[in-house]
Image (cartoon, rainbow, N blue to C red):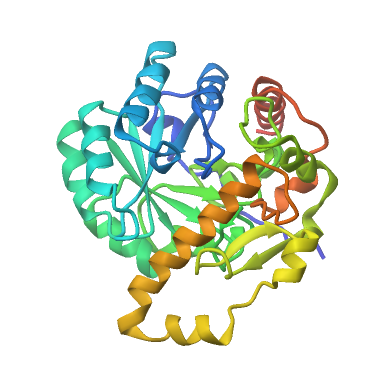
Length: 328
C-alpha cells in the first residue's frame, strides 16, 4: 500500500541558506569528488562539496579550493572529518578558514570547534547526523543545518529510513534538514521536501560521471549492478559501509570477525583499533577505486538502480534539475 502524506514543502529552503538555484548538494564522496565535479555542479545551479581527505597535502587542498574559486563565484563546501582518526583535522580546518570556503560539512566527531571558528567568518556549518540525539547536540552547539544521513545513503549509511529520519528531526529540532541517501531523481527531491527537508545531498548517481576519477570498471559496476546488490559491511572501516556485493565482497563477508568484535567492545582498544581499521579499510577501497583487481570493494548506495550510462555531470544535473522543476 502506498503511503500518503499531508506535509507542505518546508518554508526553509537550502536556497535560502546558500545563493543557489536548486536545493541540491552534490555530496562529498571519499576518493571520488574532485574539482571538475564541483565546477560542473556550480555551473548547473547547485552546490557541491568534496572531502578534505581527498587531497594528500595542504598545498594540494589549497590548490583545489583556489581552482574552484577561480572558475566560479558560486558557493561550495568541504567535508571535514572532525574526530581523532583524522590527524590532519586541525591543519585542514585552518586552511578552510583562511581560504573562506562557503560551508563545511562535519562528520564523525564533535563539531564544536569548527562551529565556534566558522561563526565569526560567516562560514556555515552543516553536520552529518544519523539520529535525533546527535542532531540535538549539534543544534545546541549552533550548527546551521543537519545532513540527515539515512539508511539509503551510499558509503557510511545511517539506520533510519529517509521518511522516518526527516519526520523525527522535523518534529524535534528547528534546524534545516538536508536529506542524504536514496536521491536519484527530481521526484525523489520533491518527496523529501514534502516530508520536511530543506534540501538534499546526492552522491551515488555521480560516481559514473565522465568527470569522476574512478576506474572505468567501477563506473561500469554502477551500471551493471542494481539496488538489490547493495550490502552493508562493517569489515572495511569499522562503521557500516554500503558497498556493491561483488564476488570478492561475498567471499570476504560483511560481518565483523570474533576478534574484531572483541576489539570493538573493549574501551581501551577500541579507539586505536577503529583508527587502524579505518585506515586499512579505506586503503583497500582506494586501491579498488582506481584499479581493477580481483579484490574490488566499491562503495555505492541503492541509487545505482538509476544509473544506466556514463554521462557528463552537466547532463546528469540537467536531468535532475529539470525533473525537480517539473515536479515542484
